[in-house]
Length: 186
Image 1 (spheres, rainbow, N blue to C red):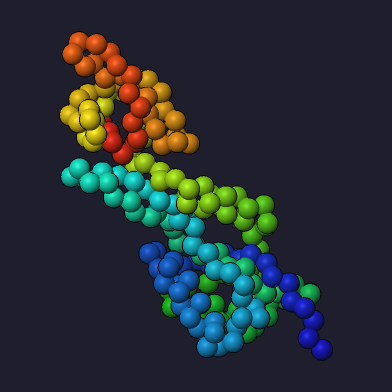
Image 2 (image 1 turned 90 degrees about the horizontal axis):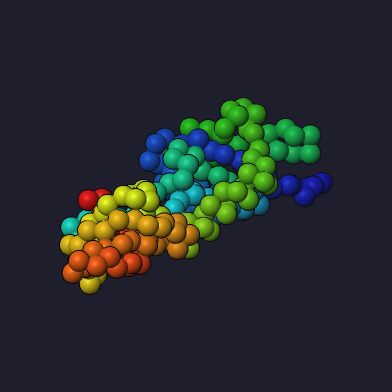
């Protein structure tokens, strides 16, 4: 008699740079090999990073945890023994080294997964600037009406991705609000 299997989060260790390949391979093969009853979700946590190159804003994605893929799946039976079918399915995935924990895959707690999922949803909402600025630092403006002016950072608002900068215009200090990507280190 089949008992309902419990899904838990596990962590797959992958070869460097193969995280997305592993995720795609699992998702593709899952249908073909009827692993749907075992595997619920595959996750590669990423964040968006914005930077300006040659005056153009580019947004790239950066992996939050390089070398790891998170998977919600049924891998252990009631007695916490590894179920062979899904275990070998993952082990045979190209680019996957194996589960964290090896022969006894360790589960990731719901708390850990909540933290990771929050990181991901935060990262989806905003682009993280590539450069880290400091208050009091002099920067050069590379976009907008104050192009090529220099200014001093007065305030940093990471949540909004904005800087308050004092720019000296015609001999007067003028406060300006700019986005991270509109400035570069002077």
